[in-house]
Structure formats: structure tokens, C-alpha cells
Image: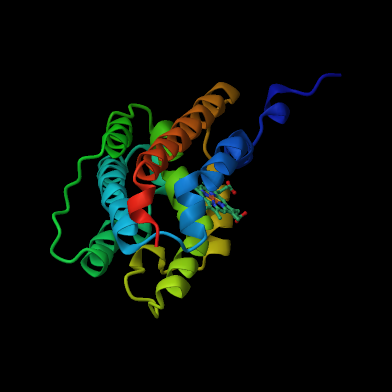
Length: 216
Ligand code: HEM
């Protein structure tokens, strides 16, 4: 007897993780990220990265807040995750007095993709890609920066969350898996996660164009 459709549907959290493994590995190994992880990016490079993230999180957090009554978005909505205030605080450390606006086609494209997401599942895909990343590899980046620059935690608000990452990620995945999505919708959400990784990759590629100026 063949299994029923319900039995063959992969949980969303598994589909998202497995569906983006190749993209994740590529992002991790991209030149800007590997230099960052190696402690070889200077303050200007990190500030330029934060300025781009500011545009992305501005879009993500406005969109998620505006759409929080959508049942899909409501399942992941959590103001405790929001990073925009932390990014602004960190920019005061890394680039005091510098204009917050940046000319970045990659950040603009990422911003526009998020703000034009029509389906709640696509908003969830963007939410997953950034915040689960921040609660995972992001924590490693924060530690590298702290050590490299001898910061004693200063300028690293972006990596400080009020929750413990591991249990939070587990409960987040359970919330994803509780969403009432069929197999086709799960595929659509995974496709949007891949798009989100591609937009992150483009952002890292844009920064990598400036690597000679960013090496410390
Ligand atoms: C800086 C280099 C990176 C490192 C060292 C890194 C490392 C990791 C590790 C170790 C995990 C697994 C954590 C766990 O199972 O709880 C993880 C998960 C994850 N990372 Fe990264 N990562 C990096 C970059 C990125 C980037 C650029 C993104 C996307 C913007 C990203 C998004 C994610 C996501 C969404 C997950 C959750 C996967 C899941 O569903 O369990 N990571 N990362």
C-alpha cells in the first residue's frame, strides 16, 4: 500500500533546512564571509555590512509587523527577535556619525523582495533565513569579531538575543511544522528560502568587490 499524501509531506523545518543546504554552504564559503570568519575584515568592512543589514532588517521587520495578523506570519512573529535597534546601536560603535543610508543594489533588491512578498509563507521564509541564521552561525561571527577586535562585547548588540538560541530554535521549528501547509506550499516556501539565500549571497558578493579596502 502506498503511503498517504499526509505521511509523505516533509515537515516544513526539515524541507527548509535540507532545501537550502547547498546555498548555506556556498554563503558560508563565499569570500567576504570566510574573511569575516577568519577575523580579516576591518571596521569599515564590517560597518558597510551593517549598513546593508540595516536596509534588510528594516524591510523584514516592517513587513512582519504589518503582516502579523496573517496566521502564517503570526506563528513566527516575535518582537524579541527584532534587530534594527541593535544594528543602529552597533553602527554608533563602528561608524559613529556616518550617514545610515547606503547605495547598495544588493541590499535594495533584498529589501524589495521582502516588501513585495504577497504570500505569508514567503514572509515566513525570509524570517527563517535571517533569524535562524543569526541564532546559529551569527553567534560564531559575533565571537570572532569580539576576539579579533578585543571588544569586550561592545558593538555586538546584533548578536545578543534575550533568548537561549538552542531551545528557541527548537520551538521555532515546531511552530514552522505546525503551519497548515500542503506539499505544494511547502515547496513554495522552500523556493523562497533559496531566493533569500541568493539575495544574501549577492550582498556578500557586493561586499567582496571591496575586499582590498576591507582587509585588516
Ligand atoms: C558566517 C558563516 C556561517 C556559519 C559559520 C554558519 C553556521 C551555521 C550552523 C553551525 C548552523 C546549524 C545550527 C543548528 O543546527 O542549530 C547554521 C544554521 C543556519 N544558518 Fe548558518 N552559518 C553561516 C552563515 C549563514 C548565512 C549567511 C545564512 C543566511 C543568511 C545562514 C542561515 C542559516 C539558517 C537559516 C540556519 C538554520 C538551519 C536549520 O533549519 O536548522 N547561515 N548555520
